[in-house]
Amino acid sequence: MKKIFLSFILLLLLSYSNVYAADGSLSFSGDSSVDKGKSYTIKLNYSGSKNLASGTITLSYTNANCTVASNVTGIISNGNKINLNNVDGVGTSATLVTLSCTSSQAGTATFSVNTTDLYDVDVDIIADDSSPISGSKSVTVKEVTQPTQPTQPTQPTQPTQPTTPTKPSTPTTPTKPNNQTTPGNQTTTNNQPTEVVPIEPEPEPTPDDPVVPSEPLPTKQLLLSSLDIIGYKINFSSDISSYTIDIDKGVTDIYIDAKTDDEDVSIDNIGKINIEGKDSIDIILKFEGLEKTYTVKLNRIVETKNDDNKTFFMISFIINFILLIVIVFLLINRLHILEKKQQSNNL
Image (cartoon, rainbow, N blue to C red; front, side, top):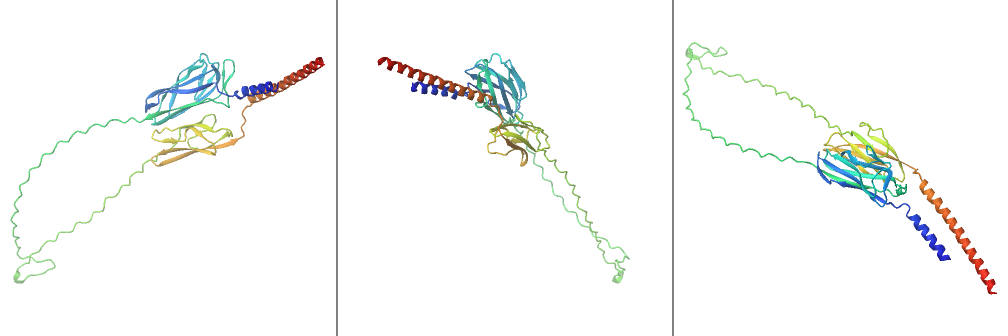
């Protein structure tokens, strides 16, 4: 009897240990490499042992501009948020959403998806907040280099003909004027004037050409054009560089989507960011040695998730356990009665 009792309890515990196991998965498919500016396709797929019917899926991406090209009936798209409501025809394997995307900046485009609660047509849980099913994908965006045109060879120049040197002319003898006096009223003997050599005036020095100062080059503006933290609301302004969001203590990752209008500027710390042990996240814009930082401060609060499902299962477990004890007690009591009757009959 004790063996039956222990086996029943063991089976009951094993049945509850699998309550939070996920019965499906989400994954991406599509192009893995593309030239900058070219369009490409990304698909979000579902597969599992249960028919997907309803729930909430959050899809986010960075370094990409995407539009929903097609989706199954029952999906409502709102920006990066996709809601499933009475999905029709998904079954156990289907493509939920097809995205048509382009990337204007070389680097890596990242796609990620996360879920909370997913249900099948019988409102049985496929995945809940303790067993989210998620996936991610990276697409390499390559810079396209234009081939250089070959230069035309230059024509050799013709050598110049040497010129014939000219003969120097014969100097003429200056004539001496009669009855001329030298400067300073100097007189010569025998009424003969002395030769006066004219002195050429020295050229006046010319002032240096004035230096015209060049206009300073304009300073490059490192500004974000948009900043989104998936699941959290901030009042973004490109001139404000510090923000604060409230984070539950149990959250380990957040999704940051940031963009800039200047395609030459790179952005660090975007996409899926691990925040374990961190009080803030720095989003850094870089261009040729210049940097600008936008800071997101993390205000951690007590986790306030809805535990109704867990409470329900716990109450159900306690009730079943009590019923099990009552049944075992009744069985043992019944065995004692049978044993007493058998003993009395033997006497």
